[in-house]
Image (cartoon, rainbow, N blue to C red; front, side, top):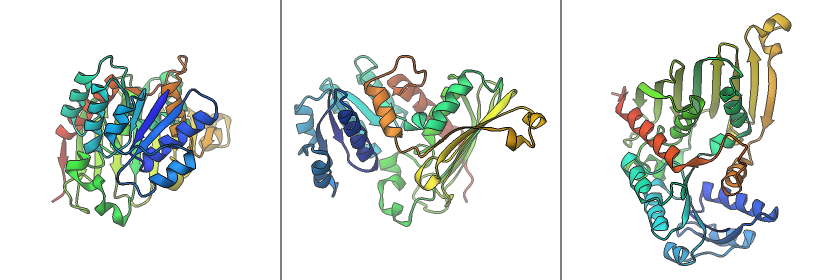
Length: 336
């Protein structure tokens, strides 16, 4: 497979490292070029990984790769995806699928087979999250009562100079990025039976027009779902709690500033056979999460048909955007 990468920022470098690992493991992967006119590291990355720097996106198209991985800001990713599809090139576009539902639908309409566009939702492939998804879908916790999601990121002072606080370039704030990751997971947990009830938005710190904290209330066909997403929480926080009639599962941490990811499970009234409820819990996995992009990239290019958690296809990406739009429609700002 001949693959090129457009955008060599934080995520693009992760994809490059993932492809390089696959290549070293003798999978059928050839990295034919990387492109990013704004990167100051691209020449060093070219030398480190032994790949060519492509001079323009048009040159990338002319090379006729099998895939283009697009890891650029939201406002440019859509047009690059469209150009790739016009030239019959498969695309992995990092989430979200456009800045809004209109753009997502435009990509969907251009698609030839609905298998030529995939969306990067790497949270599915964190060890703890992946195991929690599988346990929940297998009914390990019984009938679901509630799911709580918390994702807090403090950003940094220089974020004000970047594109993520620009509503035109980003398409929104914390709800679209990183919040859409949680919308994606909630849809999987509930097998697609998900509705947005209401939400509250806050934007009183950076004041650029994007939501900086969001609290969503959802219904997963009788399962209460709470989401708290923030880029002004200051202490990096990642936690998912699934609670069912038979027991529960808790994922804590995401790697790096969020700490290692742990996944524990517990049974209803487990304290009856242990010193305490906490002592009755089982640690299922403890992971640094550093290989999440490798696992997603491998699952995309070399799928295991027996694995129930797969990369996000175009139809799922569109459904996520539909839920995102409904979330904005049913949420209100509380900031004065």
